[in-house]
Structures are given as C-alpha cells and as structure tokens.
Length: 427
Image (cartoon, rainbow, N blue to C red; front, side, top):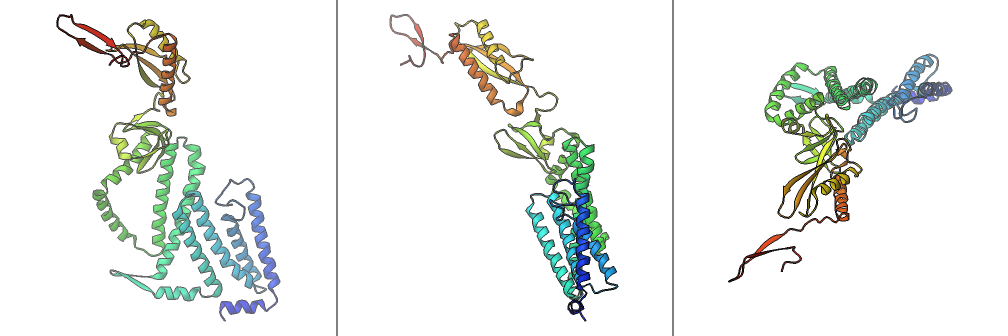
C-alpha cells in the first residue's frame, strides 16, 4: 500500500483525535517556548522574525516536537496527520531559514528575493511529493537522467542536491557572519571602516568554506577544482589587473584608514563626503546631492585632499578692491569686522587682511578667514562675508572703483592731456 492509500486507511480507523491533539499540543508548546524566550528579542530577528512564529525557531521546535510525537504516539495509534505535518514543517523551516537570513543580510536585494522564491518552490514541491509518496520515485527518475562533461557523468539528482545543499550551507554561513558582525564586531571594533572590512572578510571566508563543504558533500572532487583555480588565477592576474588593483586598493584604504566613512575629501576638484567604501570603489556624495563613484586604485595612486584628517579647519579667502582715496587702515578694520561678525568664521585663529597689490583701478586687499566645518560647504560662508563687506564699505562711503581706462588726446598746437572716466561717462 502506498503512502496516500495508507493515509486514507488511517483516517478511517477513528484514531484521528489522538493525532489532532498531539499536533495541537506540539504547536502550542513550540509557540510557548518562542514567546517565553523571545519577549526581549530584537526587531526583525532571524530566530523569531518580526512576529514570534515567522522566524526560524518556531518551525524547528514544532518539527522536533511533532516528529517526536509521531514516533511515540505512532506506537499505539495511527498518526496520518502527523505524517503529513512533518514534511510541511521541514519545508517551512528550510524556507524560513533562507528567507530570514537573506532578509537580514541583503535587505534590499532583488536577487536575494528571487533565490528565496526558488527555494520556496523547490521545498514545497519536495514536501508535496513526500506526502504523496512520490518522492522516491521522482528521485529515482532524476538519477537516471545523466549529463556528460568530458569523461565525467553527472545525473540530475546530484545537481539538485548540490544546489539545495549549497544554498543551505551558504545560508548558514551568512547567518554566522551576520551574528559575528552584530555580536562581536559591533562591540569590539569601534571604527566603522575596520568593522566593515572585517565583516566582508569573515563573510567571504565563510562563504568559500561553505561552498567547498557543499561541493564535497555531493561528491565533487576538490582536487580538480584546485587545478582549475590555479588556471583561473593566472588568467585573472593578466586579464583583470585593473579590477584586482581596485580590490586590493580597497582593502589597503580600509586597513590604513587613510580615508574613512564620513571624511570630507576632494578628488579631481570634486568635493564631498565619503558615504561608503566598497571593495572596488568608493562612493563620494557632494553637498549638492551628486554622487561620484571613484575607483579605489585612483585613491591610492593619486593625490587626494582629505579635509577631515588632523585638523578640520580650512582657510578661505576673498578679494576686495577699493578706491585710492580710501584710508587703508580704515578699510582693513572694516574687512576684519565684517569677517569676524559672520556666523561660521572662527575667532581663533582670527581673520587677517593683506594689501595684495596696487591695481590699475584701486587698492587690492585679500581677506583671509578660517572655518571648521567644511562639510557644510564653503560657498555660503564666502557669500555671507562678501555681503557684509559690501554693506560695510557702502556705509563708510568707500567706493569700489569701476574699471578705468586712460585716453590720450593729441592735437596740433595743444598739449597732451589725459582723462579718466567710468564706463558710464565714456562715449
């Protein structure tokens, strides 16, 4: 008698009440344990999920209790319902494991959602075949489907088992790496950049070990992979030099801490804040909202201005020209007062004024002042200082000269004369 016929026969025996009560008891006990242990859980936990029953712990506990009840109660009564619930809970536990881990590790990845959907389809299909008693038949037919790769033969069943085992091992590796990052790195490593590179390194090592373990579990000879890996390494070394240089430069930047997340930098006249340091590139966002993707090799081999390293103070300058009739000392004091009164200008070190040159149109002064928050922009504070300087000069009656030209008029019998006029007087 097949499993489906056995299930129908067991339903007619009249012992279904024991089956139902055993199942209800197992589910209640599993939920009670989750509720008692998860009252102080973190939001969106892998073990407990957003609610207590949509994490990994509830289906695992329910599966363990249900399977135990199936063995114990099955000695005395028929348990058709428990035999159905066991594969359902097993499929649910696998789906929840992949779903919760991928949601925490890759919260906004479309590829992660696709992998989760594929795993769900395969798990529910396997559970349905298990319940109907068709799983051994399907596995036997899949084993008969052979594929040839050179001198090696592989069947469809091995491929499916390899994909499933690899997905399971990778989910566990991602879970362990996320747990290490949250429990260990967050408390021991205070620097955000070092924490990020440590998390990436741990995740890469665990994923590599997980893939090797999964391939070894399904019978893949890893010695062949070592030869293939050596050949691929040589090819990558010649063909992907730039890409490899960017990845190496990314790790160098994170280890040396020459650039850190939150630093204000200037690269090729593009100034902004470092918002993220990837293994291949660095993302810089300007105050205007534009983002620049800079390859890490460029940050290593070229000159980069880091405005946030030792001293955040930045010196800014603006130039002012006044009439030759103005008192230079009065102009100097006006410029100092205008800069000192600006909100973001530092008092220590204070502003300074220099008489730069005797220009063609007037005296040229340079007003220099310091700020300590360049991440908030420099154009605004320069504009504020210029407005204050212009208002102060006009209030003092000091002219800012127009561009002037000298015109020589020479006629027969008349001496050489010159006249100076503004553009409005010239004809």
